[in-house]
Amino acid sequence: MPTGRFIVDDLSRPVALEPSARRIVSLAPSCTDSLVAIGAQRYLVGIEEHSEVPAELCGVPRVGGFKHVDLERVAALGPDLIVAASLHAVRLVPRLAATDARVFVSQPRTVDDIVTGMARLAALAGVAREAAPIIAHARRRIDAVLERTLKGGPRPLVYVELSPRGHTGGPQSFVDDLVTKAGGVNLGGVARVEWPVVPPALVRRFDPDVIVIAEYPGSATPETVVARPGWDRLRAVKGGRVVAIPAPLLKRPGPPVLLGLERLAALFAV
Image (cartoon, rainbow, N blue to C red; front, side, top):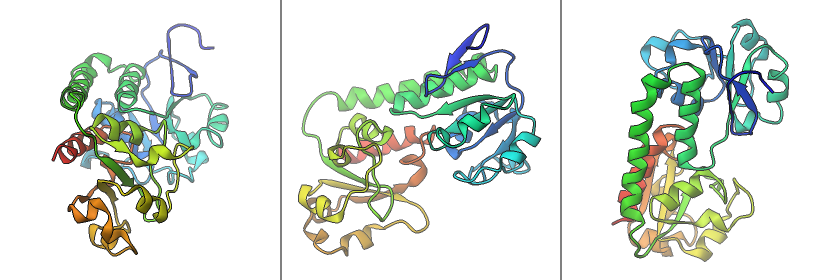
């Protein structure tokens, strides 16, 4: 347990607040997105290779991919804070915890958790006052959507396809919460795991009202979905409600998900 003031990360691990972090390494694009959004980008000394950053950060060293982190390079950068994601919790975090750097693990299970995580990172970076209006605006965006979607009325059954193999968000995932807050019912909620693979036969059986594709190079498209055996008879296809949305708005638990929430709420209201 750290002495002095501390916060807890999404694994309920205590992380000391002082001194404010001045050399931060981000191990996931979602973590980088959050740090940039709260104005802590000036403290980034290392980022994951798939992170999309402003031009002024293009020279920041890359420390490997989301799944394959170069721990020696991370250590060489001398970070005082490492921000990791849920995928790192079992394999990497115990090794990172043995270093002198503080380690904050981000594993949001709801849209609200994403914003709360941003606030905790702001506290760790000593930019809480600077980030306060940003955090407040993010919360107002969620509230504005909920004000519309909690009024009642029919909710469409929604299949969110995160990969052509059928990956989707299951119970207790932020995708499940995203769909629910936007006014839908998540088809992936029938699964027993957080990130299930839903077979095509199950999608045909439940016959969703809306199909949302996380769009990225190599993803499905509305045209390829319609061409799948038997999918031309689905309500979503017959109703013209197969929509592709940029993947960061759906599958990356960072600030862009707020725009995804707004996009989905508008889609479900039609």
